[in-house]
Image 1: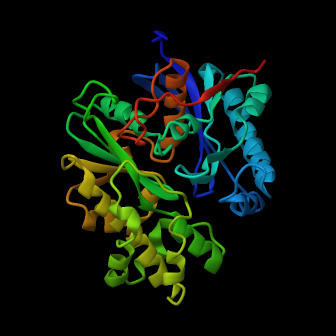
Image 2: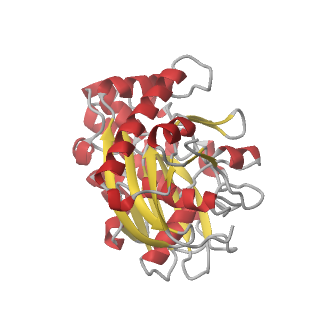
Length: 371
C-alpha cells in the first residue's frame, strides 16, 4: 500500500508482569509518529491474575487457556470501549491488540498469545490488528522483540541523532540499539534488538509468594538487601548469555533462579534477583555495534530505584527513564502496537533479521473487521 496519511490508532499491551492492560492512542502513518493521545489502564484483580498465572506456559487446547482468553478479552473490551467513549475526538481507525503471551518457544511449538482479535472487533465495531508474532516465527524468526521499529520512530520523534538504546523492563528485559541518523528501521545497520534476560518477573514472583504483593514497589525491599556477586557471576554463566542476538525468551526460562534464593531472607533475595536483571542488560551491551550515548528505560522496571541504581553501576553510559525524551514509559509498549498496527495495514514490515533473526523483512499480523 502507498497510503501515508496519519491516523489515530489505539494500541494495547498486556505484559508478562501480569499487572493489567495498557492502552494508548498514537497518531501515525506507520513510518512517522505525528503525536500521542490519551492513555488508559485497567488492572487485573487478584482472581483474574490467578487465572492468567495458572495458564502460563500452556498452549491452545490445554487446561486453563480458554479461561485465560476470556479474562483477556473481557478486560480489553472493558478498557477499550471506555477509552473510545471517553475520547470521541480520537476515534481510532484501527486497534492494535497484542493479547497475552502465555507461552513462547520459537524453535519448538511456536508462540502463543491468548485472546481473539475478531471477538474484540465484533464487540467494539472497530477493525482489530492482532496475532503480530506468528508470521515471524513461522518464517524462522524469534517472534520477539517487536517494539524496535516503533523505538526507531520514537528516536526520530525525539530528534535524536546519535546511537541510543531503548530498554524495556517488563517481566522480561529487551533492548533496541538503534542509529537514528539512518533513514529507516529496515536500513542495514539501523537496529539490533534482543531479549536481555529476566527483568521484573522473578522479583514479582518472589513478592507474590513471600508477601502476597504483586511487585517490590519502588525497589524498597531490594534496597535493604545485599547482592551476592558470586551468585551474579553464576547467573551469567547461563547458556542464553552466550547466544548471539537476535534472541528471545519466555517469561519462565529463568525460573530456576528462584531456587537459588530460596534460603535467603526477603531483602537479600529481592536484591539478588534485581541485580540479575541489571547484570543481564550489561552482558547484553557487549553485543551493541557501537557504544550508545544513553540507555533510555521504559516499563515498570524504571520505577524500581534499586534496579535503576544497579543499571547505572553496571553500564558505561547514561541511564535515564524515557520520560527524559518526552515519552511515556508506562505506555510505550501499548503505543508500539498502535504503530505496528498502522504498519500492518499499510503492508510495511514489522520485524527483520536484526530484530527477531528472521531471514528477511516480515510484515506480521492479521486484520479482523467488525463484519
